[in-house]
Image (cartoon, rainbow, N blue to C red; front, side):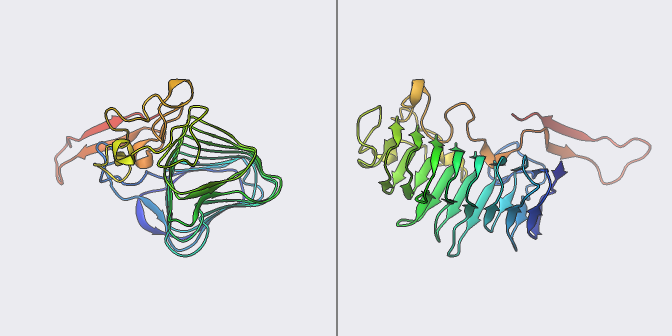
Length: 282
């Protein structure tokens, strides 16, 4: 396990062995009781790459200001802030991958796709993320041959989607189009008729009624009181990134204890009184 300290400028990270890489989270100054040090651990000058040998790896709690290359199966990208404001895809999955988890992330890409799936990928789990890509770009693009068993669930999405032979449920599509065939689509909410109105899908929803719309960068996507997304998901769960079995965690706080308060004098005698507050995180 590699714990990464909050710092403004790290270089790239190329994984070629199994590692758990854990940063402190992001938006730390915007949400209460996160970390004493509000600095995130930023990868800003190069990419994050999963290379052969890194199967079983997890990257969590990082801020990534470049693209992510996933070249092996059985890896997880969780609770990260990933943003890339130049032309190019941001999370790129190579061909013939299985069992990749992309969950609880805050992903913003104005240049192209948030997630690009290579040919013959299967068992890809994309859930409880915030996904933004300016229209006409794609948030999730999986048009290559052999793509199957993609699970897109409980996301808040702005931008186009292209998926086939996939399960698409409990999402909130703020705006954008949907393309694809042979999908299982149910219990989604959309601003227009992208998913239709059968199988528990809701069409033409006024998005101004769905979210609280105020607060931190990620907290504003919580559901508003009386939101049509409350209980509208499969088996009565909430739609969107804060619903389901593994809801989005504010600031991407990793699932380890964190010190969110620290007070100590600059000088002291034989005894130095120190006050700290620590909380566990799921």
